[in-house]
Amino acid sequence: MQSRGVLKCVPTFLRMMSKARLHVIIEGRVQGVFFRATTREEACSLGLSGWVKNCWDGNVEAVFEGERDNVEQVLKWCRKGPPGAMVKNVDVTWGDVTDEFDTFSIEY
Image (cartoon, rainbow, N blue to C red; front, side, top):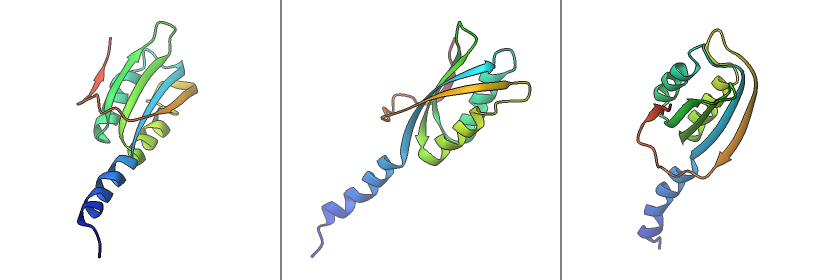
């Protein structure tokens, strides 16, 4: 006999396992090329939440949360960036999902 309580927990567990959090610092020619705006467009189109901002040292920093496949897709996009960008390096840190964001925003 199967326990209904266990069966109800499995989909919730699988949904939690499929979510991811990614923190990136993008180096190169990434300011003055609409990197933040296009990152926001890309993240929103993928249903991700988080933020993106310019750093004082010329880099761009971002945090993404959402479905793992979509987070991996935005990482791939960050490695290239928008037209005019020249990405030299992306520092990647995976973390635990916090669900602290409702939307994806540009921070100042």
